[in-house]
Image (cartoon, rainbow, N blue to C red):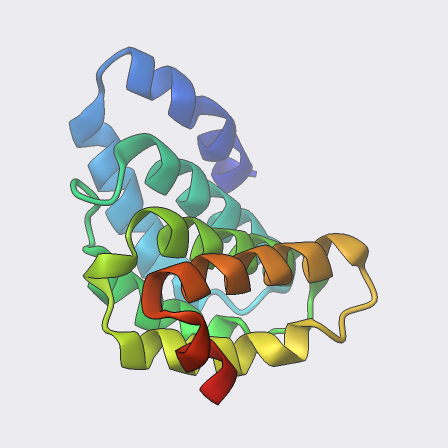
Amino acid sequence: QAADLISHVAPVLRICEEDKLMSHLGTVLYEYLGEEYPEVLGSILGAMKAVVNVIGMDNMTPPIKDLLPRLTPILRNRHEKVQENSIDLVGRIADRGAEYVPAREWMRICFELLEMLKATKKGIRRATVNTFGYIAKAIGPSDVLAT
């Protein structure tokens, strides 16, 4: 519930110019990415997405290059809320901060995303296709097809 609250309050904290607090919240959420309960992990990912949206890629702590490798194993999680939020977060990073991550990591993520195209929920499939598009724009469509 606290993570859901963060995701709703993050835009307000940006208006109040509480960047230091948002940076600290990003670090705390990053530490909880190992959460074992899928419902809680989905909320943490949603809050992390809100923090990334508000702070931006440049000011994010931990840095995006450290965050993305932690998200790759989470993409294998079969819980719908976790899938949707993790794909949205990866897509946001691919759209706005692709240069912070090496191309090899993006190719690894593409390989993980292929499984998401089999999801029963349309929102997950749509988010996956959009994320593929952002990654293709970042590393080139031929590299995405190579996976």
